[in-house]
Amino acid sequence: MAAELGVLAFKLGYADWVESTEQSGLAPHVLRALDTLRKAGAALN
Image (cartoon, rainbow, N blue to C red):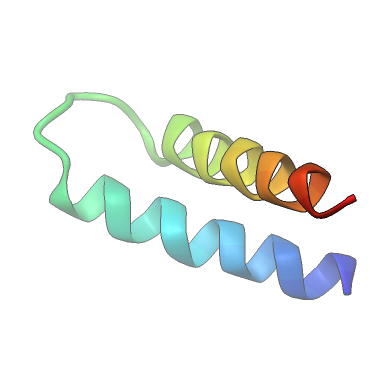
């Protein structure tokens, strides 16, 4: 399950990065997506 969440975070972050006008790298977008997924998971408990 952790691997699937990691792949999902990458996919979401990549999509956000491609659409972004920011001059930043991919990592901040992936980390932001991972944080969003963590918060969503915590809300399920």
